[in-house]
Image (cartoon, rainbow, N blue to C red; front, side, top):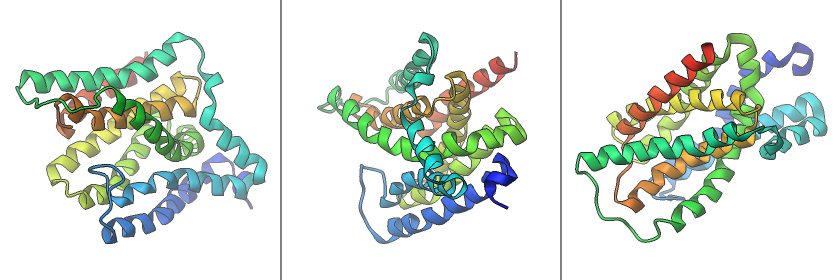
Length: 254
């Protein structure tokens, strides 16, 4: 009996097992190679493409080339975004939250000197991070989210994916010499980000492109802060993102 015969829920365990298996070589690479694609990102961060790879492999196994092409096409399903509000939410929410964190640092007197390239850097980073975000979101959002929502509901699916997503990042955080407290706050933020992205996914016409763009903007926000004299603070990231996740969850239940 194939995964297609068993229904969409049969995707769940194979997807997470295959994603983990594909990730193992990258975790090993991060331990052996002292290379950073970007400052603060170990070589193991190249694992970003493993969720999409796992999803495409499983789609090919269940439905052949047609299913694989259909999943890959979700990368640019911009037509699913209907109206102004989904675009505004996807493009403005993360910059607004990053701006709030920046203002908190400013109020605390923790800002340093801005760096050159403050306006050019985010555009370059956005292109790179968008490609990497697609490497994740074709798996997290395009492939596994809806079967998990069908089984457990939207909030539980978001939390389950978010917890796995956070745990998936712990080894790269350790390889980047992050402190345990930083990792704890970043994991809390990661789960909250996933809750927000799941709500945006269903609120924005189930667009993988939209979620990948939001994911990319989240990374840009963290890496751009040094250019404007700030430092990324995982605690502030969590304390600004968690209320947004709670608010969107409660609004969806009304």
